[in-house]
Image (tube, each protein chain N blue to C red):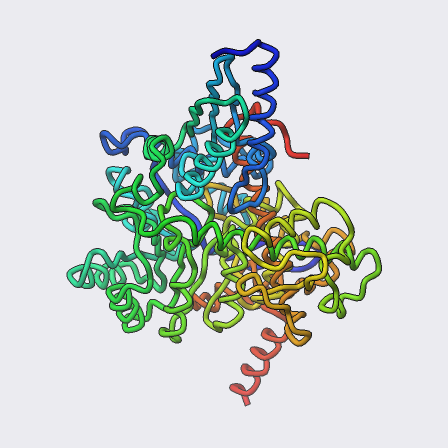
Length: 237
Length: 346
């Protein structure tokens, strides 16, 4: 069944928003913000066409696979979308990745004999890093607002200033089954979810800061590379 | 040598290349891989200042004259260390082999230090040719590229028992500097290929070797720093750190430098331009001028002139036993040298 052109435009807009919820697992930023989505449209008969691109021909295929699979799932869940054709372009493993996602096979099945393990652990590992990096963001805002850095360990998640950073951190904690309510500790071990002890807080905060540095430095590098490869990419602010 | 504000900096470029990625050197049927590879490198160059960007044609096959001018005449470098990368899977005669680099070393013996490489997938029978290369070129270091493709294998790890055989050989031959590429997210298929844990194991086991982690494991700099802070023989190789970040994102460059100074320290950081991805000149000048942009970086250690001298050349000079001119040494080292001379004379 087909829908009106106006309705198709609405569904396209919803599909784009859905792609905004998909993150680069390593950079913890939405594909749409990174400039990785080169096309997203939905036809009147509910066929979604999504094209993704990456900063280099050799970007690691495990991350690429995660992003293509997540993009497929996000767009497929949009009401009015009946079929999704999502493809990665200009990449050395594009064929294997696109085929694997289209057939819903896992990463290892797409790279027979090459990849040794599935990507769930990789994803969890990067989520844990996103928790650490997100904790640094929230803590810095609190210190700027007058909190004593020595006493952050005594705070609850609910004490952090309202805003996107706090909600993103809560979401990452939820995805890892870590405590994420307002009355849970602000500083938690990303592996176990246990509260960080006062004697470990200095090291914990140093690690959180470092993890954020790695993430952000890399995101900038990826944007720069994408800009060089596809000069029409919107500039980073 | 670079001089600024009355200070003299002895410069060792501890990570650079002389490659050939031209169309004539591409394995038939794998041209896309060869092309994709060099285009990827070329995109990295765009993160440097615009006036230093080259055309892809020049970038694929720059000349000896380009290198000598960019690195030594304009680039302030005193000694440059070749770090070979074979990539014979898609470059017929290799991308940047020890043999290619040796041609320049033979012509300019005082300018270059020639490292070689090994691949444990060569097995026990590769040990002898490795030893021959080390002896022929006088190598004191190796460059290890654990993500090298070969006949269906997409990489190897330093945890491999055969890799340990080669590291034992390194100890035996006095090849004390092991440069391991752990860098940006290109190409390995599984996470092990750019996980730094294998360096951790090897560094613990081989205390007599120094492990210089090139590109500091970016983007997984946190994994690298946790490891390096615990291992006295692990160094931070700044290649890519300065090239990719210093010009394009100065604030983030400052953060990365701050983290490295905090976790690793100025005694264990070594400058590398990664030429020809980036020319050394602007990186060296930028490092000498560098300071944190503002007070928001106050929780990081400072880097003074002495520290910059160490990073730009003196640390690598120690690792490679390079003689540093008297007027480029650190004040206390120069002073202790004078004392030694006095003692000998009395």
